Length: 200
Image (cartoon, rainbow, N blue to C red):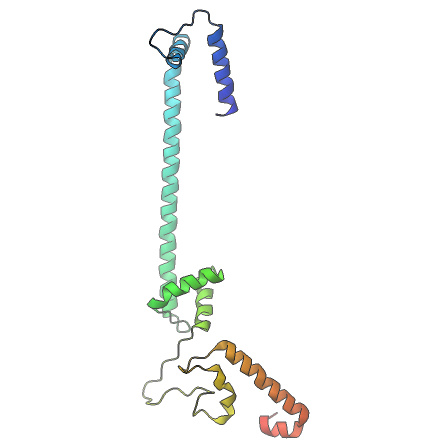
C-alpha cells in the first residue's frame, strides 16, 4: 500500500471516528458499514472506486498482452533470422554447414560466447574441417602435402594429419614452428648449404 493510500485511509478513519452518528448495524461488517457511510456522504464514491479498480486491472491486462505480443514477435524474428543465417551458411562454400551440424554449431557458439552466426561458423569449421571433395574425372584421391605419396619434402607435415586425413590445426602449428626453427638453425650453421637445400 502506497503512502498516499495510507494517508487517505487514515483521514477517512478519522472522519468516521469523529462522526458520533456512525454505528455498525447488526449483521453488517465494519467494512460494509464504512462503505455505506462514505456513499451516503459522498455519493458516487463507490462507483468511482470500482471504476478506478476496473481501469487499473484493464491497464495491467493490456500491458501484459502487449508484452506477450512483443515477446512473440521477437521469437518469430529470431526464428526467421536463424533460418536465413543457417541457409546462408549451408550455401557458403567455405563453411558448407550440414543439417546434422546445426545443433553442434549452436552449442559451440554458446560455449564460446560467440554472438555472430558467421563468426561462430568459421571458427567451428576451422576446428571441424570438412575434406574438400575430389575433383570430377579423377580416380585417385586428392594429393595432400605431408601425406604418403606427396613427396619427401613434405614429410615434416605428416604429424599434422590423423589417420582419416583430416588436419589437426594444433599439430600443424606445432610442426610448422619446429620446421621453421630447423630451417633457421640450418642457415645459422651452414648458410651456403642452407641456400642450396632450402633456396634463398
